[in-house]
Image 1: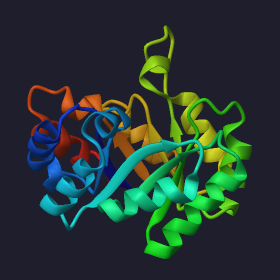
Image 2: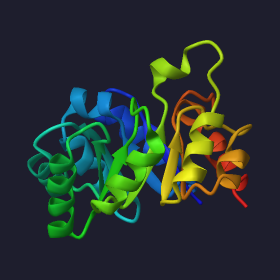
Image 3: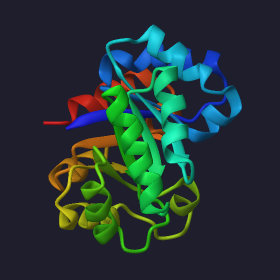
Image 4: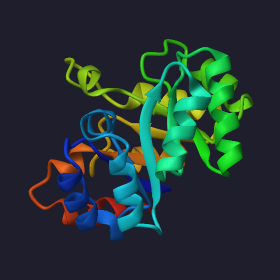
Length: 207
């Protein structure tokens, strides 16, 4: 299982600083949607330039103009780009077309999708590299939230998948046990007093 850090900071400088601390312990560096909206796609270029050996994931959360938006992100240096699972099939297919042209990959994010299992199978058939079972920050903040629903959906879908939303040192074992290909940690790393140590411990917890 790969470890992905989600960088939800707001400036290129802060993103480069965090990436520099944790890169040796992670496989995928994700530039979060707020970061891309705040800093622009130049942050993708900057991170890829600083860490050319890492998979760089532009979390675009594209909802329309799939081929165009994915193409822009790939040209900026992204290896993976996200499209929302609630988007039309044609949007997903367009993004996949751009990915194929660049020999890169599309990740379909199922945030807000009610029937995650069915949609995961559909978008995988459309060419998604993997599917992200994702609970957003707002959903995580609701009383009683836990990862179990995401993990059970991931297991049931039987497609390559990642899990994002509440992944930390106490839950990463369950994420791996569910069969996830990628564990996505955001606040557990960037919110830690020592992000490098947090990333190292998460990586060490993957067996």
